[in-house]
Length: 271
Image (cartoon, rainbow, N blue to C red; front, side):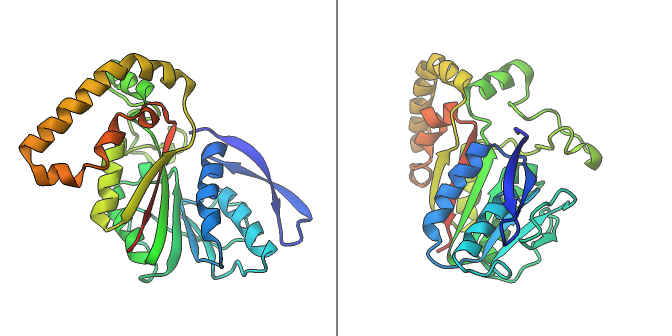
């Protein structure tokens, strides 16, 4: 997870600039903003799960104020620790995402989780909670580190650890210092979690490609193509109903995007 520092205008009058640190990569934030913006035809209720310093919400709050939309009652950031929260113009609330979320059913129109789910001890249950608090037609957008890119696969082969996933620490004070990534789930498992929670229209895109992974992916391509074809045949022979269920996600497992992406970005809709 790349730690960078960016200047973000703070305050409704735009008079002060406040440095807000973003833990997730700038490209990831921009890509998610590109997904959110077309939805903002009216003031939607947006929850940022694991909001950190409030980097993303700060920018979204500026957009709401520029359009004359109220921020209070529409935008909210939650995190287990708000000591670094630096967006005072957007409300925040301390929440442990490993427990049921303290919001009523259908409380939000959009739920964001930018590089957060990999920190949760129960990501599938968190997805179900997100489904519960979303209004019908609401959208969830989740980004997670991609453990499936070619360099990460080679890292696992050589060290037993995926890229950006060291042996986890059980000491809470070490979670930030040692990254705190504890859920190295491949693409198909995140997709499963969204399906199981009840989401539909599941789409997956990427933030950016890792240059080193491009070369490694090219070397692995003959093996991944052969492996994908054999696995698809085996699944169909074993259970045709299962093959139909995973038909859309199977091609993504060894796609060029998955073999080269730094982070995966999922979007899905609550029916």
